[in-house]
Length: 427
Image (cartoon, rainbow, N blue to C red; front, side):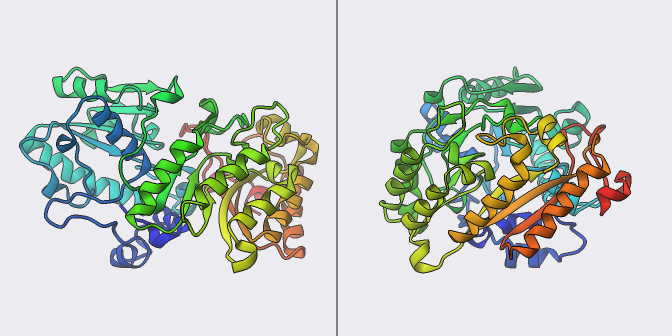
């Protein structure tokens, strides 16, 4: 459990092969531990997903002293005879997600190694103390098979959002009545609990879902929900009071915050009000994890105003954010990207990406972009569009990162590996 030295991009190092980087370098240089009680193993900072479950349990009737957030490498200090349920939050436990399969083809990744090591410890502790183990988080789908659950000592896997069901689930686990696999989604925004402690890198959840409709994306299964500014200010203050000096907003499409029009034109007032409301709490800056090139290009003034609120134009500070290009071939865009290009037409996507990249760079934003390689239905002509775009990036002195990711549709059968890329895709 780490703050990645304040740089989320260091998290991608965990997607690389374990054999390449000595573990002490990984642990000490790139991913040092969060502040932890050396006697009890209790962490002072945790993933926002764990904080949500923690709040659900406490607000649902569990006593504060009965809910404990433990460091995954100090479980022997945290688990004992009174432990009834151990809950695990996972992002990519088996190394099957696109970034990991691309960076560690057919090799054991750091993220998978760390998960296996933790589960081995849990299995031994489980034999001694006889508790139940439940797993959730964005990577839970990788474990949703009986054989994988058995190997890793898991009793229940939750795919989706457990906010509304956490209390009932933990009570069922205590009684031994919980199902092996659960799929659940939050129906009511009001049922998403407010966090009660600081989060990794001061990351708070501004939105859920996206609404863009890309057919390869798991996020698309969730409807877009915007969390109100008042609760975001409350959660931001918890992190600032802990000692963080900035706020990071998690969203799958931040520039659609407050947007309720079908044209997907950003709601400039809602977004700038949010940035001002959080920056005004004393944060050095407010960053965000994800946005789209189409939203950036739809309102160039918006990025200028966000950067001005952050004082990036005065300090020269650059902030990184993630954006998906995926493909710029018109036929592929129409088929797979849903309404990702709106308010622009699918045929304009290549131009929109180029213009969006320029707008971001002009306003001190560093795009960490992705392209998908290995689409099952991609032709050499489709691939050439992406190659041409990369050439244009070089000519325009683009300041950013474009990471190729192997096609992944959340099923091993249809997902791509380096061994079955054709010549054009490999190029």
